[in-house]
Length: 293
Image (cartoon, rainbow, N blue to C red; front, side, top):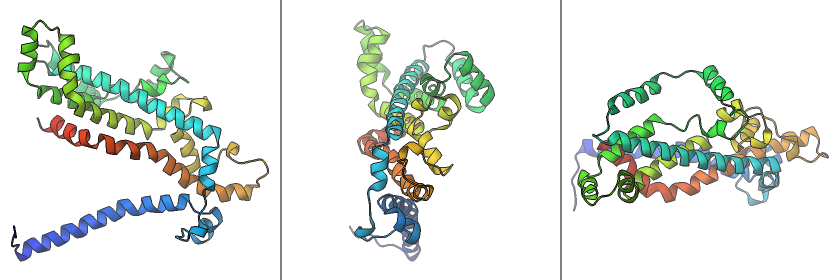
């Protein structure tokens, strides 16, 4: 069907297309630059910048990263922290959201007020550190996983989603003699895949990109996540000596540090890039249902 647009409509379409093209370029070009730079020969990258000539490319940066024990250990730690944090956050958010969505719950208004209060007022860094220390969590994996597991925004999303579940399903189950736990696990939870995947993706990405908690609470380098190793490379502009053999001079270390930066960025981004296509169908539905209803 042909739609005739006015001159103003055509102008708006052109402006929208130009704006979207510019937005895509702003996002894509840095990614393309980082990926190409990660495959560049260090000498060529430092002297001439990126090159599309295959002869100027090298996988030296990836070899150094994938053969370095500290980097691999950091990657494994990051996967564990992000996965455990996502599981714990989803469990807490789903259970709290389901309870707060039930009109029969006494005092739910008070609980929601207390939850909302923590969104605007926090104890601060030093009291939080002292609390973690007094609980004996310092220099343990739990110091990274537990403190941020209760996310009020995720609880609100879960509560809003569960309010959209038909009460007739619960009432019919009650008539059949099902307990609240049976209703939750057998009926409500299977219908909650969209919001579960959304919360899991939020939590995983947030924890995967986080390094501050690990920097504050973890002294043992064997517990450091990949992000902390990457931070030392990107921010402090230094490379772990273990990543470079003893025979290399300081000049060679500086030459290789540039290529390691870009290769580390690509490697640290791979899990998120791989995850998103599998979560996308649930992501769109879960966000819309949890925010509109």
